[in-house]
Image (cartoon, rainbow, N blue to C red; front, side, top):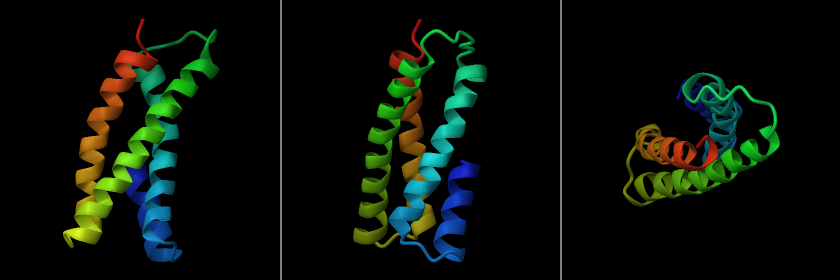
Length: 110
C-alpha cells in the first residue's frame, strides 16, 4: 500500500498528473513489487520453470484489479464526492482481497 499511495501522491500532487493516471501508475508499480513479494514470501514459489506464465496470470489479475480500483475511485470520488485518498483507500482494501484470493487460487496454486 505504501508504494501505491506514495507513487500516486507524487504523480498527482507533485507532478500534476491526472488522478486516474497517477492512480494507475501507483497501482502498476505496487503490483510489480507485490508480485515479487507474493512469489518469494507469501506463496514461497521458488521454481523458475514457469515464471513467464506465472507473471502473465498475475498481470491479468492485476489488470482486472486496476479496472475495479479505478471504478471504485470513480464512484466514491467523482460521484459521491468522497476525498480522493479515502476513495483510493477503500478501493485498495477491496481490490487487495480480490488480488490475494485470485492469486492464491489461480496464479500460485500448486
